[in-house]
Each structure stands twice: as C-alpha cells, then as structure tokens.
Length: 459
Image (cartoon, one colour):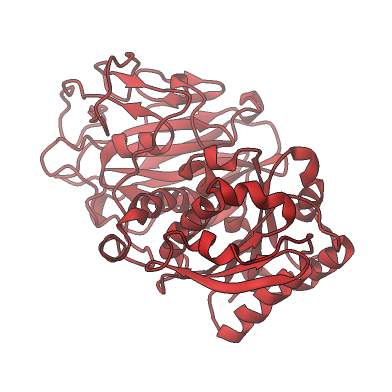
C-alpha cells in the first residue's frame, strides 16, 4: 500500500512489529548543497530529555532510533514511553556560501514499514531555508502515527535545536565535504545568547562543539516563517511587547504542521471566587497576552474576543494589539466573584462566532480551575457543538484532583468529532514557559482539523 501525504496530513503506522524506516531524498543538482539527516527524540512537553536525544552523525543511535546514512530506522516497541515524538530533520551548514535549500532540491521523505509506504514531498522551499523538519512520528491514543510537517527555517540547526530545548554555543570549524556528495556536512551553529562556561556535548558535525542542555532554558525562537496571518513588522510596530510571544507561537504552529491555518481565536476566563489569586498575581494577564500572541499568527484582525464567566456571563469584551497592556485588571476589577457554570459562556462563544459569519474555524481557549455546577448540561452542549467548526481547548489551573471533569470532556463519547482538548497547567501556570504553553495548546488542534474536514464539519 502506498500513501502520499500533503503538508499537515497524518497517517497511522502499522501495528505489527517491524522496523520503521524514514529515508530522506532530494533531487541532485550541480549546485545543490550536501545535507545532514538527524532525528530528535522529544518528550511530551516537546523538548529533549537530554543531550543524547539528538541522533546524528556523531551519535547515531538512541533508544531504538538509529541513523544509517540518509535513513532513520526506528524500532517503535523499543522506544521508551518517555518519548512522545520523533522529529526527522534535514539541514545544511548555514555558513557555507549560498548554502540553502531551493525549489530544485527541496528534500522529501519516504516512511516504510510492513509493506506500507508513506511519502511526503513538501511544498518547495523558496525562502532560503537551511534546516527543516520533514516528518514526525508521534503517539496518539496508544498507537503511532506519522505527520507531514515540511517546515523550514533560515536559521540553521541552531534555531531548530533551540526550539527543542537545546541551547547551542559557538560553532567549531566545519568539516570538509565535496558539494554534491553524500558525505555529511558540518552544521556549525551560533549561540542565541552569550553563556558562561558551556558544557561540551556533540552536535551534528564531525568535530565536537559545545552545547548546553539545562533543565529549564530560555527559548530563542527561529526567525519568523511565511504564512503567519499578521506580519512580524506589523506586530513589531503595533505591539513590540508581543514579538517574542508571536515568534514562540510560530514555532509550535510549525511543529504541529498547522502554520498557515486561519482561525478565530477566543479567550474565556473563569471569574469564580477561587480564581482571585490568579488575577492578583498577574497570571491571567500573562495568559491573555500569550493567547493574543497566538492569535496574530492565526487571525489577521489582531483582536481576540474576550469573555469572563462565573455563574453566568459576566462580561464580553475584546483584547487587541492596542489595548492589551493591563487589560485584564481593568476589566475584571468591577466584576463580582461568583460560582462556576460553563454552558452560559460556551453558548455566548457559539452565538458570537455564528454572528460573525466566519468561514474559518474558531479556536477557543477556555480557562477554568474546577468543576462546574452544570456538568450534565456542559456535556450535552459539547456533544451538540461537535457538529460546529469550533474547537474547545480547555486549560485547567490548580491541583490535578480538581480537574477530573475537564479530563472527562477530552474523552467524551457520542460526538460528531472530538472537538475538545485538555491541558492541566498546574498550580503555578505562570511558571510555565511560553513555548510549553503553545505546544500544549496545539497538541490536539491538528487532529481536530483533519477529523472535522473528513466529517464535513469544516470546509
């Protein structure tokens, strides 16, 4: 059986025990640069677990993932449960003169296992990309799938490695390789920021360089890629304080294969009494700015419809590039604290979305810290709403024991499609990095897009 994926598409991998091979190829050209292939093992948070999770020329095997020339061989039963995704990466040394991909030599990937052949040829790289994630193997509901990513960056391995939680230091001298040969080419990288006393570990080059993988790292995001709803220049002019959030959201969108997707982003905030500390310490303002940073990648109007709820709908307002600073405090201060009912807020979102007449889907960030009083009504409304082009991303604040109901919504039965995701942000959600938040927000959205199109919910 042979399948060709389009960008953002996915397919299940055979369940029978067999070695998965991912082979990277490109049309040979006289001037085309030689490339390196590597794999990155990623934990559920979208980051490497340690320096050994980079499988490349100098470290060709790790936890069931083996590099063999331009082929990555993956023994899925051997891959530990702590690995959630395996990204297949191809790159060029960005320091070589005129070394970047072009339409003529855009790399392709072929995934094979047990008689199944899954191919992916991304749209031509025409923006001087020097590194790209071609495909990723990922877990979903206890099984493995492959997703066609096809996302390139012009920052070389340094930018991509940083997005995966690796901080790279100064480059070592490049190893020589004749252009057009299969010999691996050095991929020297530069540090995103000065760092004292880096600890030496290898990166994809024949000569060791220094890389530091701290447990918690500041993320330097690759340069923006095409197809965001709003340009970097416009964001920089209108809201310079959102530029880093805009870039961080782009990395997660690209890794999820939905860069270029358009959606109306909504933000729904819990204003029940138990939420007061999150408003006082600035957590809610921070979340609002993070959602706005995501929105300008998905929607070009620069405005997020904003709704506060408790027992009912307390306030409907908006958040945009001009008014976002201190917006949450100004809006919520006059409101009374209340209880928790989800359905009035959900109905208000549905009504607002339908009134806009939008042809794009809605992506709703629905934040709360506990179970509602209207649990039965919420379940029934979510079932009915599954026939609408609206995806509900529930974000739970607080201890895990208070979020059982939200988890149940993520697996609710009798829906047209699975139209909800759930993310437990914990007791200190403000301590999470922007990149971590965005990765979790995008965790289930790509699968919903595919399912909604297949079911005719989304056209």
